[in-house]
Length: 336
Ligand SMILES: O=C(O)CCC(=O)C(=O)O
Ligand SMILES: [Fe+2]
Image (tube, rainbow, N blue to C red; front, side, top):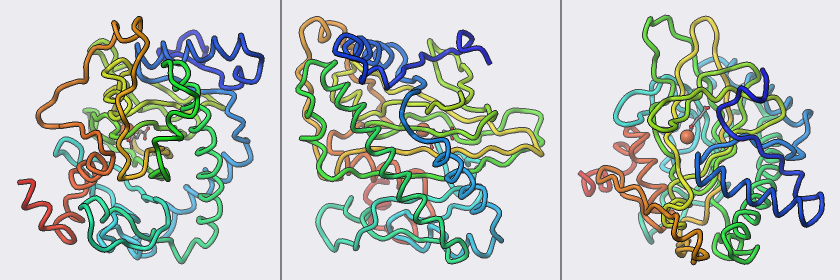
């Protein structure tokens, strides 16, 4: 594919290493891309092809396990929404998503009491049948966390804050790695791989299996295709960054249309978000940027909370009603 045909901007992170002038221009482009579209391709991340291939292989190996091995770590075992979600086990906008996935967060001891969002804290479930998964995920986590921090420092400066703004307010990040497989379908109409949504946090770095389309991004009311670009991550911002910038930066709706059988598609979204109890203060934008802030998108069915834990809990309860019903009936009742 020709880069000029792409509907999203392409940004090269390695421009940050090419002197002060080039770094400034990168930051201005980053700001513009996330003000206008909210989605872009990121190249020059330094993530090695070798690591990408090992992560890709691990994802394929996981989904190729016998169903019983995957169900041994099903997310309904976990009050913390960790582990394997079977095909059709997840919802977006109340509709079933046609995908299977494993959700992996920070490895912690459960926390008793405190705010309800503390229930998201706890251990992961790892497949006994695939002992190598944990190490490659740890490497992926460390590498993508470093890329995320570089990007956030660039945004902070581009928004008139000190470079360490997000580092200072994030606390220990709540990361989430999803390893996802979208099975092909034979339906004549496009099927919902994952329904239209905005990500609930700050920043998402998405790795997509080479050659696999299906991701679509809403631009000016139209769905446009965002096919994978070799060596690039698809990056988007979430509701919390829109919120913290008074709508100057945009969280954008996106969805995945199912592949046509017998094809399928693997993707690995990495969500980089603040600690659950972190509250991102509103960024005091320079006047010329503040004048272009649109205000935060108001959706009564989807309130945005400035406390990240509230936002994360909202999206987990909504996406996994079965886990919610088994482990958190009190929260479900309180929200009904
Ligand atoms: O699989 C993809 O390409 C996107 C997935 C996504 O948007 C999500 O899980 O939030
Ligand atoms: Fe998403």
